[in-house]
Length: 209
Ligand code: PRP
Image (cartoon, rainbow, N blue to C red; front, side):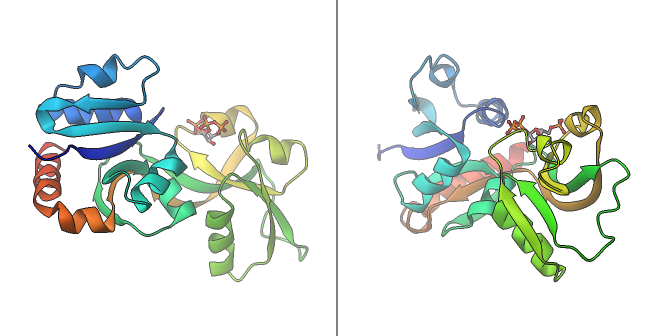
């Protein structure tokens, strides 16, 4: 048997759905489910090796070819870009990027440069560049909703899933930026060298989505 195809999975929010999908394909994911603190786990019957990593690192490992494939959110792909193929929209991990402000704030009025807080500066920058709108972007690491509340920013560009965090903090979406869901990505060289195996896996996934 050839060496296992190595697939990097995003730890956390997407992990359960990804493992659920692999099991739906008929693969035994016991080692992944009972991983403890282990980070590389075999899925022997599928000749797969699962690597558990943070979203940004999934892209780094796939780009560098140390993982053949990866499962990562479109949010991370949009922010990091990079050289890899985006193969399949896996349909789970659905949410969106949105521009939000304090409830009732008239974001587009006035002439002053607006300040935007975000974990995704590249996404925010492209969104406002497309509108030809000058903004000051401030990078925040988490709980971005705090920034307008503390008067650091006029608005935020952030992930909205259920909308609960915005609602409970007196904020509202004023514009959708982009839809998000989990994507299967592949290293460009792996896609050539291990074409048949990757193609078979994609076929199986598409039949089971
Ligand atoms: C994300 C996002 C929002 C929240 C949205 O944050 O940045 O804060 O989830 O979810 P909701 O619409 O269902 O309320 P996450 O929980 O990943 O934590 P973080 O803000 O600390 O990064």
